[in-house]
Length: 244
Image (cartoon, rainbow, N blue to C red; front, side, top):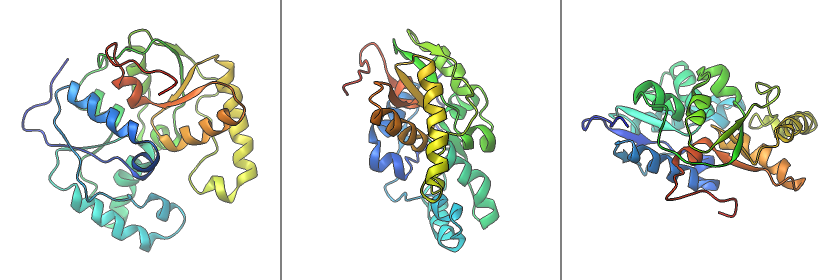
């Protein structure tokens, strides 16, 4: 596996949702990057990127948060986010707020475009389907990078998701303001997931996985939502189990 140059300063921007509700994802990112030779720092002063405020129309409230993020992560050669939506906010919206976005990467982008690796040495003997989240797909243009990483995972059986590029219905505050529409979109996405007979549904954003996983859990389907980072960090020595 390629190793990161010793001079590279890499930082993890965990994002609010991951830090608060899904810390295992952040830990998985660190394990994965360290396994690939990176030395990862976690600046303790990091806060929300401001996406929720900006997307809800509170641009003035988003700007101080954006400035803080830019300040906290200044000087790093790469800032990795396990979230296409937050990475999209930083890369594409910060400049319109007059804020330096720095060298920000969504996880799959960093692995393939910067480290130049597809096989990260993962082991995950489960049937998995992948949901491409809207921001990663349309704003960042990550394309098939997550799929390339998943196909290289030892033991993993990748099941194609029908109508994969259709939104799951989360959309941040969209799910709150348009609950009925969101629920209908979620129902379609869950049907597609169940049609794959997958044990696990994965994505690059915990926000979408929380939405999809919540619906699947309420229906007692037995399908588990799991962030891409946690699959890529899984090894034969530390196998993932549904009871974790």
